Length: 278
Image (tube, rainbow, N blue to C red; front, side):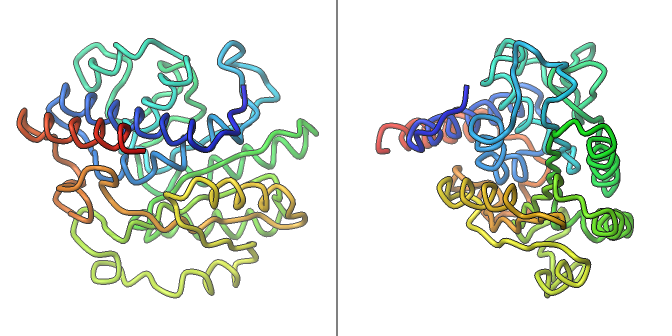
């Protein structure tokens, strides 16, 4: 069921953030920073935009989502659990031995995961292949791919962008989680990735820049992408790493670190307070 009420979507996004903290805390490891930064994007996609049905998870004509930045799996798992693909209690098994919810998503083990990812740079190539297949089969499904701004330093990303443009994949929407931080620090200081809009335009993409935490703006951006014909779209979503948890926000150190008990309690309290105030 498509949710159009933005306030309801905001509530879901906060619940997703609480699930992320719960999963990473239970595992005592994981990547909360980048998971929190893309929580709003995934919430809008799964609850407002994508043609999917949790009761028909293998529908061949469903839309697809590729989380190319696979280390942000806690966000994807949390959205899938909130959507009803599996019981939320499973989030507490994240990264544990024998659990299907491993540190990177596995399409053979987790219902609702469309592509196994983890090796950065490769997910977009898979998404391009899916979009081409949809065109060939006249399936009509759209393909969404979330990439990280540290990830786009990988050369394979730009090869995939070239292929998407050449094949006029207007059924492909790439979302750049542009939180400006990667494991070693600020993007520009580590890889020097700047002038992104000009780069993507030169590769033949329709480029939309948006506040990645404003749900109304995200909905408008995805709607505009659907209306764009003859070329693929990339949405540059300006986000905050660790969004929603004050002491994690804009801190590269929270790229791959789990909260201790005190930090866990503080994070959940902050997120609960946000729900009450909003």
